Length: 343
Image (cartoon, rainbow, N blue to C red; front, side, top):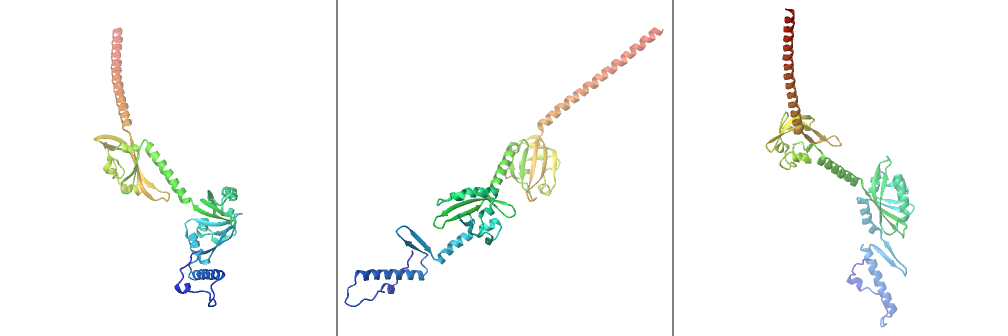
């Protein structure tokens, strides 16, 4: 208990006694207790007492004053986590606005109802097993809150039992955003893995043409690190539609497997280029994806096959001419034989 300093006037206050009598020990004890009570009353009047601690042989009890609870209630009402008080049979005695907001209900609709009504079947079974085990030591466990429309809200609950009041205090943290972030991280990791293992060169650029992501193969097709640089300054493409117009591509224009020559370190590499807009889950364009497939080996193979075809065709023509000439010669010989026989 906090007491305020007494004024000089209060310090001089004493119980009057008859003149000429020496104060007895009982009077001194009474005087001491009177002064102590006077200090207590003065401190209460000045608002300097938050609570009383009453001690007994077996325990201590704390009695708080009404105004002392207000800062704590404001704290609970305005914190970002849900806060609630349960009876030992999981009936909600108190719930703050944040917990009601998680469930999309009014606070008044929570009081007096069982917490199990707002849990998924699996979460209810889990809570039924955990409630009897809650003690003075804080326990943490995950539950799934369920709204009236069936939407599940993943949450982390921290519970502790107040043995004196037989009440369970629970703080509930909404994990929805954390789970979304985890999903984004996992998706980002998957995207990164795909980019790194893709055979084709894949680049993600913003609508201004600045490279934001590049696959391992895309890095092999240039001599500098492309991320953060303008696409046209890194990749020297020569072919129809180059340099790429990222503004038009972001508006919906598409390029599909158009053959280009890519100049890399003074050497030309033949690539098939595709490009188009990238949209998010809301359908908003946030960039352009460009893919380039190195077909240089394929072009070499095609050239080899073309040359072999041309050589074969030339030999066929040559052989056909030889056979035609031989056929004519044989026909001439046969004609001469027929003429000789006839004469």
